[in-house]
Image 1: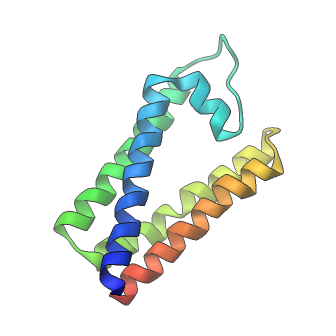
Image 2 (image 1 turned 45 degrees about the vertical axis):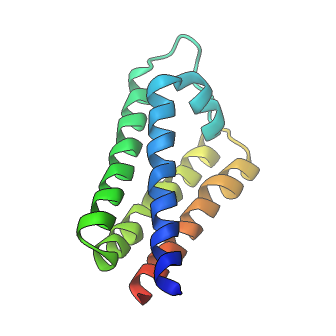
Length: 123
């Protein structure tokens, strides 16, 4: 019973990160606002593109590990990748975003990613 839950949660998280990356690549301004730190209208969209590429790559890498390397490799990946939403929490707080966004989105995401890692280690 634990195996489908562990794999399912990891797969959903990986796909969600691919979606976030695609959104930053295709709609950088709205994606930045959803992130919690709106970008300047005439700012340099290159940095938003970098975030989109980073997130899409993380998501694809997670899917590849899940499909071809198994639960333990994906668990280690999730454990390390949890640093990204933890860092995002600090970025949002440091750059004027709301505490609700920082903790309700980014920190909560880090917690769910860590739970996913724990479940994957358990299978």
